[in-house]
Image (cartoon, rainbow, N blue to C red):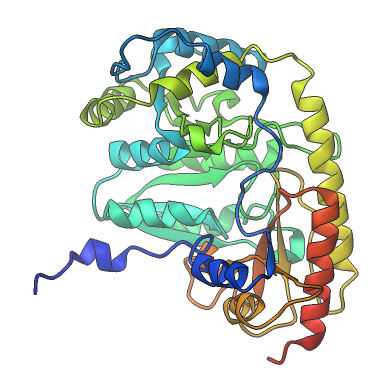
Length: 396
C-alpha cells in the first residue's frame, strides 16, 4: 500500500475542530451544544455588503488578477489609512483568507530548516503551516499568571539562532486575547532589527480592543519598514468567515515579488468575496460601535462567570474575542471530550478548544481551554451553567 508523506504524518490536527465528531454525535442524541470552541461569530454579516454581491451584474465569473482587484486594493488603502497605516495598492496582495496570507509569508521568507519564533500559546495553524513548509517553530512560553504578556527580551535573545528568520505575533492575540502594548512592540522591533528578522504580524482582530486601549500595528513601527509583514482578513472584522478574503501586506519589494509568484501559482483570490470586501470599506463609521459594545459585554460576562468558579483561573483579555482559562482538571482534552460524550445539563453541553493544541512545547496547556465568546449573552450564561455543573460532576 502506498505510504503518505512525512509532511502529512507530521501535520498537527486542529485543536479547534478535532472534537467536531463528538459534538455531531451529541446533537444527534438531542443534546444542544453551545459552541465556544471556534471563532465563528453569531453577529449578522452586514446586509449592505451581502447586497453588493447579490446585485453584481456579472455575465462571466472570471479569474481576478493574482494580486486581487485593483479597485479593492485601492479601497483597502483607504481602510488602512484610517487606521494610521499608509500604503499603496501595489503593497497589498489579496489572499484567500488570512490563512493564505500566513502561508505566503512563511514560504516567501523562510526555507525548510529555518526557524520562526512564536510566543505560545499561539494560533494553532501557525504550527500547521510551518510544519507543511518544513519550517521549525521555536516557542517562547508566555504565562497565564501575567495574562500572557509578551515574554522577556532575554527569552527572545536566548531563542535566536543562526537559523532564525522571523518572529510571528497575533495582535490582539488568538487564543489568549492579549493586546500588545507600544512598549512590547518596540521590544520586538529592537530584536528584529538587531538580528535582521522579519516580523509577521497577524492583525485579524484589530477592531476588537477593550478598556479604552488602542491597537498598534507593526506597520507603524518606524524603522521596521523592510521587516514588517502584515497578515489580515475580513473574516472576523465583518463576521464574514466564509468569504475567505485576506491580505498580505509589506513595503519590502523583494518579499512582495516572491509572494506574487505564490499568488500567481494559485491563480487568483475569490471574486465575489472581493466585491463584498470592497463594499465593507464603505460601511458607516459607526458600524463597529455596536459590534464592539456587544463583544465587550460578552467578554465581561464570560470572564466574570469563569472567575467565580472554584479552581478556575481566567485573565481578562484586552482584545479579540477569546479567553484562555485554566481548569481544575488534569487533561482538558479528555474533559472536553467527556463534555460531549457523557455530560448534559438541562439538555445541553458546552464545546471548548483544549489548549494543548495551541502550544508547541509538549505538556503545556494540558489543563487549559480556549473559549470564544462569539455567542449572545443568554447563550454564554447557559454555557457557563453547563461548565459549572460539569466541573462539579467530573472525576479526574
